[in-house]
Image (tube, rainbow, N blue to C red):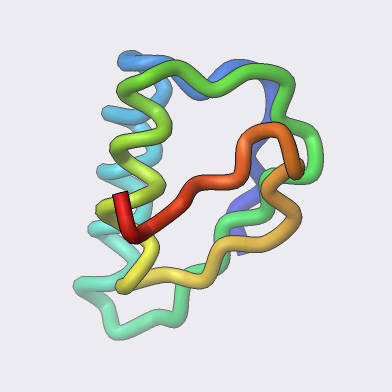
Length: 70
């Protein structure tokens, strides 16, 4: 489980993508826990939409819910 907190912006997305990719490459199941997230930028939303099928996303606040049909 990777706990994501603070602001998910362009810089944070790069780090989070690297961590997720490294764990997925090892065959690990990845869960992102957004319990402590304060803000998510456009880049962050795009990342979550793209990564969603490969990882489990938990506790994404209602005001940041991402419609995967967009």
